[in-house]
Image (cartoon, rainbow, N blue to C red):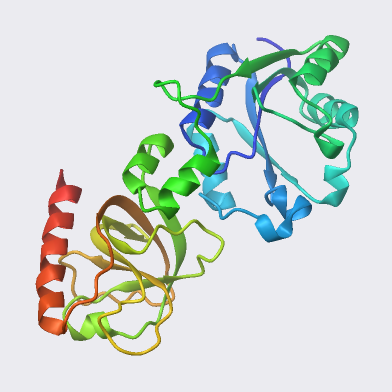
Length: 296
């Protein structure tokens, strides 16, 4: 058995198709070595530009789980604070990669930087590798069409409501994780009781509109019609909400339970209807469409 470990480094927000390529490469060359995914939390922008921290594609818990699903034997999470950000590049290599993780191969994307003021890059890493006797495997993070894959690109797609293309790059539906909170209960009154998802402020929320996808609570996983927005048909000030109607389910009591909403398809934009009757007609059409899509 080979000695040392294969260390794959990245923020890995979303653990998207590009990240999966790095982990697949690690599996190809591991030859019995342990595969370690080295990631950072919170996002480095929290230190460098707190007012410009991007919303997350996954929670940290989901990120760790996904990294393990995609070949990581271990996941190491480094707290990204001012002290870590000021670490000299050579200290990062010696203290973390060599002494702590016993790296014999390090896999990174071509745009990888590290250390104080991002002074470390693939050239310095390759130089350090010769000094310490490990190898560096540099990968291009692209799709099969030669287009770059990045968390920022996927985030923009989701914010624009393009959850279908985001799903291709993530290799799974985009998901929000939160807690079911009390809303206005208007859906219950009109025959479409919804789970209103709270505690999602730091996550990437799709554009306002109606979507087809899934609602998961505990072991239950239901096809769902999902609405994001302020429901302009009804008068009054209403904050932006993310709510899901579990298709054909009745009598559910989901308040205060952990829940996830997954987005498969965008059905339409948010519309203002002239009263309840045309809204109910459209909601039935939305649910029928969501049912067909999620059954496919």
